[in-house]
Length: 193
Image 1 (cartoon, rainbow, N blue to C red):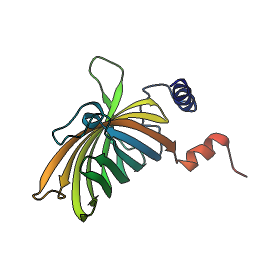
Image 2: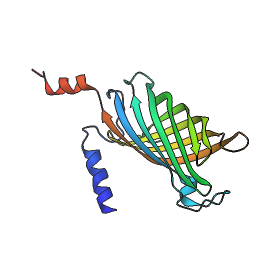
Image 3: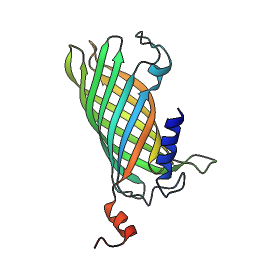
Image 4: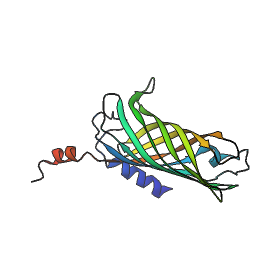
């Protein structure tokens, strides 16, 4: 645990931005996101999945250049769940608009709100692949320029059941960011010649 804490502190000190800094001076970003379903991690659900059931979502995110209200976001997503009824895999892509610099009332903390629409293929053991849609709302808080805490609300079209039904999930996780604004980096360093 101590090693994880040291790694997180080092990641946060790599940037020159202050904590809770507004994102208007950021360029395009590339991010890697990992989240875990909260309910399946802490309690037994109605399908007999015990606490600490893994339901992990991995996402590679590209965020466009910051504009007045925010920026566009697209991502490739993979979800893995080890359920009582077998393994579940969700492969897909999603897109949305990230509204940035939203204030938390009575504090100086800023957060981001991102509505997302996703499409992918849902695969269960011995059941084949089925089309699936996801509607998500993601809330992010900057710990530093390179690291965000993510709260992900997702509604997934679960056609793997005999009748179509939607499943709600609340996940928590981290997003690691890499600034991809090459021209800004060159301007800070001076000319490359």
